[in-house]
Amino acid sequence: MKIAKTMGELRSQCATVFAGAMNGDIDEKRGRLALKAAAVTAELYQAETRSRLVAVQLKEAVLPLGKQPIGDE
Image (cartoon, rainbow, N blue to C red):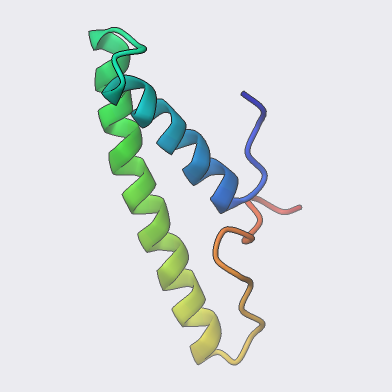
C-alpha cells in the first residue's frame, strides 16, 4: 500500500483493510486491526469535516472532501 497523501486516500486505505476483514480475507488479529481502522476512518472523516467548518468560518478556501493534504505538503 502506498503512503497516503490526502485524507481521502487515508480513508480509502482504512476502508480496504476493513473490507478484507469482513470478507474473511484476513485472520482474527488483522480483523481487530480492521475494526480499529474502521474507527479511525470515522474519526478522520469527523476531523476533516470540522476542519472544513473552521475554514468556512474563517473565510478561507475549502478544499473538496478527501483533498485536504496531510502534513506540510
